[in-house]
Amino acid sequence: MIIGLGHVAYKVKDLDESLEFYCGKLGLKEAFRLNHENGELMLVYLKVVEGQFIELFPGGIDKGKDEDERIGFKHLCLHVDDIFATLEELRKRGLEIKGQPMMGADGNYQYWIEDPDGNRIELMQIMPGSLQDKAKEL
Image 1 (cartoon, one colour):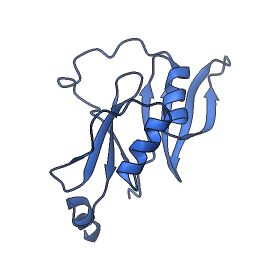
Image 2 (tube, helix red, strand yellow; image 1 turned 180 degrees about the horizontal axis):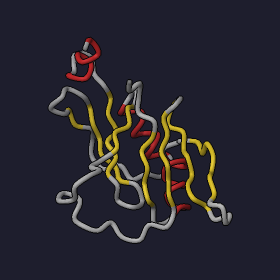
Image 3 (cartoon, one colour; image 1 turned 45 degrees about the vertical axis):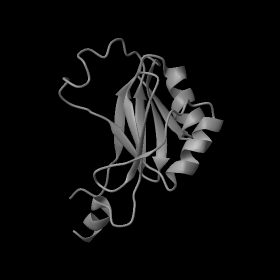
Image 4 (cartoon, helix red, strand yellow; image 1 turned 180 degrees about the vertical axis):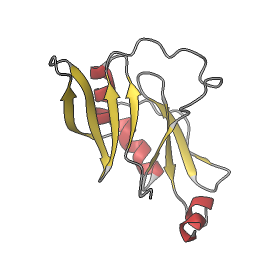
């Protein structure tokens, strides 16, 4: 059955800007690229952690409907080990950090950022006793 999350895929408007954000700012590593038969770039695979990736597909044009009304993808959540240290590192790497992390209703620290295409990314530190922590026992 299901053993994990393999990847999340985005169609991006500016591949170089997206690579700078995901690799340069967030610190992900480019794993590999795939090309179409005609040699044109199809996608870039970025490693998040062992066995988990983000795919970037170039050539995006328009996001379409308002995000709050659009059916489908809502946001990506990345787990972090120390949200305060993570935000300080992201600030040093040039990402604008406004405000402080908030304690979510689930009992975890969270902070929201956006990639160059406006895709929302939640940074979450799982806290002892949170709903996700308690769900490990399921």
